[in-house]
Every structure is written in structure tokens, then in C-alpha cells.
Image (cartoon, rainbow, N blue to C red; front, side, top):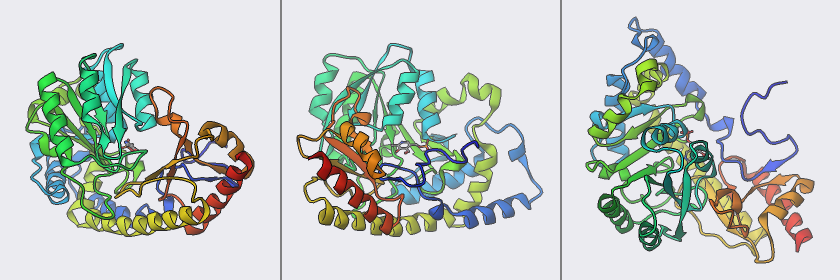
Length: 377
Ligand SMILES: Cc1ncc(COP(=O)(O)O)c(C=O)c1O
């Protein structure tokens, strides 16, 4: 039989590495109600090829939502509708790079972004990070050696480390991008999922300069199956996207879905869904934290302020790739650190996710991991 959804682990395996929201949190009723309201209306431009930048009404609703969510003004003319961040990254690579070009990525970074960059035959050069995210000194060092087309980073509640770049570093990076003439592609997918302190300003704040592209997505705040997101940038940069061949041929990237989601935003459903997710995920993070302390006190980690992930440091003699092989026999899985490294390092690290499973399964998964670690020691 063909699989129904992506990334399904075998039924007897608890995959603590899995970064997908569970079906139980995806808001069917909210989306059904909005879609029914919208489809009951007589006007149906969303069945036609759409405006390249995205439907004007939707862009207005999205701008109002982001103004509220980010805490500074977002203007519709600075927004461009995408099919989610993955597609936006692909399009950025198409429009701004050629095979063989150098780009900079955080070490570690979102492993599936590395796959997209590899599809474009780009040379991904790692920039060091610390507990505060990307290290500007490492960036400066690499700038003396390379001329990157862009720097890809996840500034807030990073995947996989959970770290957040402080405001001063954000200012510094923007300054460096201007001085050295490269783009910053800020993947802000987790920015609105904050469980304690509000994070520093999103990179969207800096889009009065043409060097900054800020990417957002409905995948983590509503549902990944929508394949809907946005890019926020200076209007001159937006024109680079709307003028491309893909849009010439196919029109705006997701007119039908954005029409349905426009109602979700305007009815207040998106804001309340985000609040609901924050409540659920905060409890799950606290639970995983307590369970880790109880079952696996030998692992070191920092508690993230938001997002999906905890980045664990294994005792020195344990290699996470070898541990993963062993873990199969214990019916537990996770993501080894090397997956997130552009130079195949970080074998002493592993990523676990706290939003996919409920408490009982998280607990059972950690007990299995504990047995596996005992066996490996
Ligand atoms: C950092 C990061 N960027 C992008 C994505 C994918 O976003 P989208 O579904 O909008 O393509 C994910 C999903 O896990 C992610 O963690």
C-alpha cells in the first residue's frame, strides 16, 4: 500500500527525532469552518491563476497578522506568498545562485535545507555557533575567505539546537551583510512559538534593507499540509520573485489555499490556534525536561525558549550514529548530530523533539533510550 503521510515510523517504534506535529493538534474544524464560509460566497477568483505576489486581500490580512505577531509594522507590499519555506528556499537558490556558488550555513543547521542546497549544487560552508546561535566572529573569519551568495540561518528557536540569536548579534549580521554584499535568508519558522520570554525582533524587521529575506510558514502555526508560507522583503526584492518564469507560467503560488486561510486569519482563528499550540507545547517541553532529568541525567542540554527541539550532548565515548543503529533493537529512534552538520561532525550530539508525542510515549521512548545507552556504555 502507498504511504498516507510522510515520515511515519514503523508502528512499534517511538521516533523521538520526528519533527512533525501530531494529527491531533492539526485544527480540522477551524479550517473546515473557514473553508465552508469562503466557499459559500459567490466570488471565486481563487479558482483562476492568481496574482504573482499573492491575492491582495490575503496579503492585507497576513500583514495585519504579522504586525500584531511580530510587534512592528508589516506592509502588504513587502510580502510574497510561497508554498512554504522549503519551496521558498528552492526559489531563492534558483534566482540568486548558480551551481558551485558558496553559501554560509550555521553549524549545525536544519538538515533538510542542506538537501535543498545540495540539489542546487551549492557549496555550503559552515559558520560556528554557540549557546547564542551564530557566532559573528566566525562569520567575519569566513568572510575573509569566501564571498557567499547568502547566509541561511534560523535565528529563533533554532532547528536543531533551540538557540536564539540575541538582538545585538542580529544587528551585527545585518551590518556585515550590507558591508560584504550578501543576502541573509532568515528562516523564522518557529518565531511565533515562544514558551517563555518573547524573542528578539524577527529579521523581517530589517527588510528596509535589500539584503534581508525573511521566511515564514503556516506549517508550524496551523498545518504543514497547507503548503503555505510567505517571504518578507524590500519591495524591490519582491519584484525579483514576481518576475520569475515560474510565476509567469503558473501565477501566484497558492491562490486556493490562501483564500481559505484568509478567513482563518480574519476570524481570529490563527491567533487562537497559536495560543493553543503554545499551551500544549510548553507543557510537553516541561514534561520532556523532567523526564530527561529523571531517566537520562548524564545527557547535557539547554532548555529552549520555544520551537520544537532539544539538542542533547552525549557522553564523550558515545557516537550518535552508532547509538542509532543500536536503538533499532530497542524500538526507539532520534536524529544523530551528523545529519545537521555540513561537514559530518557533531557525532556526540542528537536531536529530540518534544511536540510529536504525548507524555506516556515520551516517557516510554526515554526509557528505551536509557536501556540502549546502558547497552552502549
Ligand atoms: C527550520 C525549518 N525550516 C523549514 C521547515 C519546513 O517548512 P515548510 O513546511 O514551510 O516548508 C522546517 C520543518 O521542519 C524547519 O524546521
